[in-house]
Length: 96
Length: 244
Length: 199
Image 1 (cartoon, rainbow over the protein chains, first blue to last red):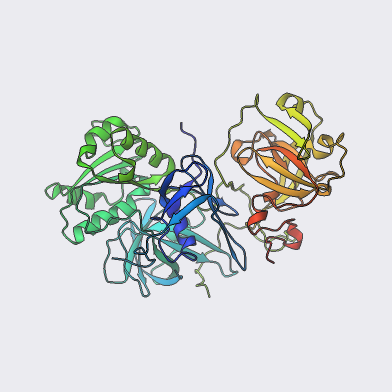
Image 2: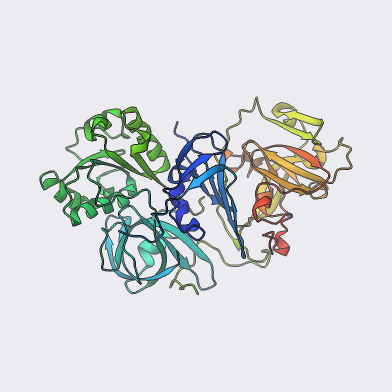
């Protein structure tokens, strides 16, 4: 199927989300609250061409995470994941 | 992660449409091959645009990085970076970003790199990182491009693959091939995966990078060839700005 | 303080007196989407009106296309700051779709194929303010721009003009839709620059 695919992946959200998370989100493991699929956030389908950032489960399309920047707040909705496990060894800005 | 200032210290055209920009970055903490930076441009009236670019250079302690930017016809930022930017100009950037789509120099398993178009950039950082520490991890690259003129880093890849096949490079041309090509133009397929990549029983870690449709296609082919999903890492490129 | 990039202007055209505050003019038509483009076969498409308990009206594509249509030319304004002047649409007015609907409910939630929703006061979708549009610039509305049909409510920010619309639910109270529940303004008047809920 050669449909132009209008999504990226969790890697493209990392810069924006680095403002909120002290640990690397791309290698974080999460579980979809809808279908139960487990995966790395890097593999989530990411929609960025919209008034916010929307990450969807690569398997079932359910919204895992949404993020909106207003002038005064960052709104974050994580209800689409049962959990997100970020590795404490993966701090931002740890180049090695 | 805060925005840092970076100064353009070098410009190098790679192809007719791609340019490498060398940047000296204030307080740069070094990086891991595969990571990217976000670049922010701000117009005098405050309007700003942010785009992500993979770091093309190997990790080092010089406080310098290189990014390679492909000029998109309808782009808002890439025409500026590839045509207007001058040595001495300042940019803002944020990073290094990403902890999953990375190759660390202590990895010893076979590595399969699969690049679609400008997806070669972060994979080239991995190749350069490996060379900079003399790693002997077995590396193969399957590089899909439209035509020979679109190949990035061609001389460097040729030199590396000539050195005792240090990195084995297989090209796939989708629109126009070189005269001596044994394969007609076309997308990568199961046959090319079978002949041009590490077999799955070697348990390689694969890194696939390029436009989303390329990544999905390559990913499907690798899975069909027996690679485990957990051994394949992907990074999708695409329009993060607005398009027509 | 941001570093100013010498010579960078972005894709904008020069400012125009008719622009709402904070907007710039664009000549292309950016595609924004929070999810995959749904592909709805016309023989399965429908538009429904309900009140939360009862189905009040339903059209399939055939009966929908038998309704009287209008061609309108309007300016549209996206909360991401681009505005586009003189866009031409053909569609069915919500006045036609709501003609036989008697209700004392004052709010609506428009629902799309996929999971998108957006809320509007009923008084903002009647009196020649809203259409279900199926043609853009004389051609069938493309899927990436919301085809087969989208809501068009040009007097509010364009996130309210829900793509791939499938129906509306009448409600007694205003409730936030997809973006309104995550920081965007519950109403969204571009002339009052009502972008966010926390302003």
